[in-house]
Image (cartoon, rainbow, N blue to C red; front, side, top):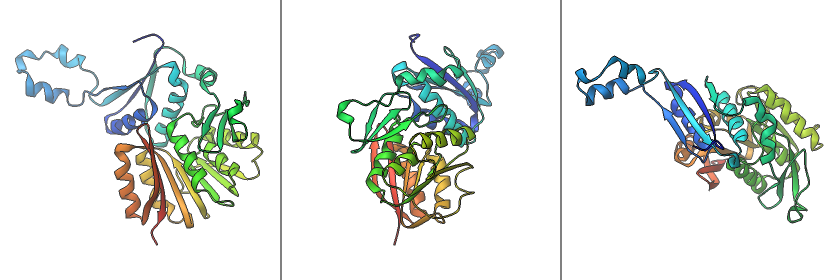
Length: 313
């Protein structure tokens, strides 16, 4: 592999491997590699006579209780963004991990990734611009500018799931709506909703740093008086009613969130759910149906989907 590529290796418990692998597949286009030796002893026993299996061979096979998920990222794919995405989603999923990387120290990404953040048009009326250079090409003039400095929180707008969510917000938001953004990260979805005409927005995140960064980004856009953020797990500590609830997480966490939305979603409101790989779409749709929702709109992009759901009458 070229030295221009970056490898991150996440060591996790076998019981959490499927969750970590799903999150990793969200992050990268360069592929993932999984070391999983949990079934090695049984496989060797099935396919090789005992007398041919040495203790040295068994010892070399690796840890039986833990697995390692390797992700490989080119600089063009923004390795810093991928790492931040992985770390936030792993924290939200409650995954403990050990991280190794082979080229650049983790703290270097805080600034190095900025070179990959360029103005990005989204939907019909939005352009996402970096806070350190908010000039836009002439063809994007007249669009609503979401000014972002994600820092160490996920949400620069470069990932497909963020763009899908913003497009659905643009399409379904009604002027004066109140919005709840679950897993707010940089605050990009809540800020986008406010700029598109929402009355107020609440962002929640399990990461205190994301709560801080989202507040700072809202202030940069002059929205500090209409945006609040707090640190909590999913929506358990939130009260009130919202015409729109957004959650760009992963399928398993979205499924955990859905039962709690019933007390929070106002009549006629919409759920906008993403971070869902297309293979997990049926699982999320089944959970929505179980709790009285139907899918009113959807879109897929690059192996990801966004679902807009509403209550059955």
